[in-house]
Image (cartoon, rainbow, N blue to C red; front, side, top):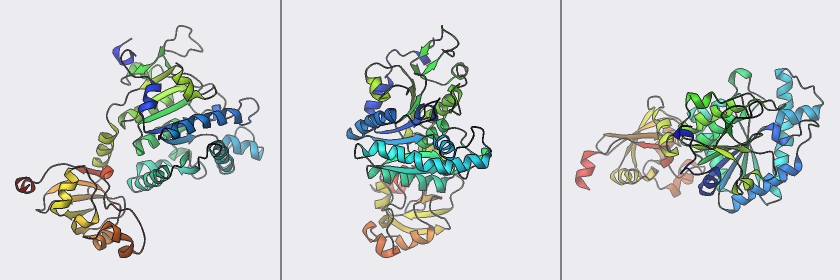
Length: 392
């Protein structure tokens, strides 16, 4: 096996869980429901709740991406297994209520609150909707809430779907700059071949790079409820890796699957190809042409160079027409382009806030919003101003 799949000197998934601060956990329908009866595996869900609560007590932020709304809705409505699009959307609408209630009950046992987040592909790809979704989930995490994410199957069509929750989970992990994405599966990781068909298949504990050889190891799932197998998990790994997110695949069939990893349970770890911060900066840098310009003073310039956010008090002038979430150009006191970022305010709001303290935002606008005009996470500084450097 090549060095890209050699586990020697590489951390395990259990180690990464210990060091990660923000973790996305994806759970598929095949784990949530009994394949024969179709009933929810309540005991298993309660035990997974134990694991999530343990992570929360360690100060970690957890986001759940959960399948199951269609399977639950189908059962509640007494619908057949093969459904047309409209019936699937009706099942999703019905089942989503029951799905979130399952999670709410499992987490409430540990005094944790669940929140429902329904996403469509545009919510993670379109910058304006991306920043809104990111802000909402970030606020929930700051409040100690566990977001439960699912695809918005009630309004999406096959042409505009993520296609499966493995890729949805990877998009969410990328959007939230997560440290780790865990895919709980019916298999304990990646194998050189399908272990159900090939007894000589080798378990691959570490994947440093997703090569054509690795992609060729993917196979189809034979579970009743799942919408994808190892192929979709490898696609998710590619998304996560490029976004700076480490990804792990481990068995979710057993009780307390995350605790099992600490006891030596098998898993496959996919290394990130860059850092989450670098990946997000590249994502911002890939935006369309800036829609406006924000001129800043020397104090704001120095703050940006130190990695801080742009506050309204440091803004001297606002030009152009832009809305919340648009890309804006940042100009130094001399008028030099020094970077760009995603603004939290429209040009009209920014003009009113220019030179104002963050504590005065509510009084100026008549409503409360973010303290930062452009948050540090949404900034890309491309160069320094020579005049500023000479006078500092």
